[in-house]
Image (tube, rainbow, N blue to C red; front, side, top):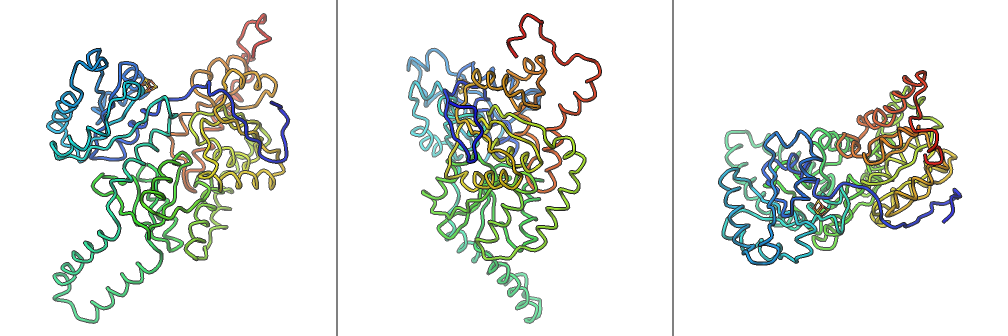
Length: 472
Ligand code: SF4
């Protein structure tokens, strides 16, 4: 393995010995997004401890998720799994009456081979509530990939597009008859024509990825400005509003960690995938919109100016980050998009650690990264899949980056050794998509730099004992 920074992107793969959140943490944001859902994590106390600690104060807000804690008897198959789950789900139905229950499989259910997928349809019939099974376990996935497994499972539950159009038509017909019975014929024609025009603009477009509603509507309206109608989101605000899918439907992702969902949408639901860079940073957002418009044969209007305006507003932050170096240890799969945005901001990226890289799903983002490096005349970063945190620390010792984006396990030890750090998990929970949120990304990135600038004069940047100077 060499530390040389080359002209093209270099991909490496290490041992996978790194820190990240368990994918079951996706319940934290998904239960908030899908308002009528309930998440049941079928696991052990280990999973329970993790959720309880990782989700912080959220656990006091009567969240719509719970643990089904497996006991000795479950694991040795002395108890009846089906009856146990039925008892719990009946209680959930009685207490919360959700529109869907999502079972989250964990490491233990994998190892003891609990047949969640087999039990779900039977219980679904008995209970009369849809039960979706997602295997978001720590054996196979990392952090944000939990959302990917849930959305991939949900993609199977989306209604078929053709059926829905027919149903809509029937409803529309009767509505039109009722509504327009007292209007003049002329007006009726006008309205129908308008609707027809709207539908004609572009084929159905479904965006996938869970975003806070405000961000989702910002992205939808950015597309609307270019006369692209978004026909639905996966997931929608409510489970009952899942978008309809079919072979006429175009789909486009908003997050880089949704490769399984993309595959399911293409292979199982026959949708057409639009492979675009992700709408993170003004550059990414513009490229994302341009790609969608180009697929629909629409010429974009005023996008360039809009991007310029956003960069103009970021000036104060850009002065802070320009020329600074950054090292992504890698734990949430947002790294490539964030690195590309930071390079465009004038930063130098030494290394992009990433838990898992689907080169096909991220193809557009990868080539965008490469072009950005060329345009900014900055050396290409190395991309390290399944990184080894120990090795990364050694590399950081040599490279001495101005900023390390890392998990909580390494943040304080690195700070004590004089390396600025930003806690990576914040990028998952902050609003980072679209034109207007670019400021928030830079707010996060520059926070440690601004803080340490303020504290510089105190002379306390390195807090380790002198004898240990060989370690960073
Ligand atoms: S890694 Fe496995 S055992 Fe640990 S919290 Fe996640 S699902 Fe549970």
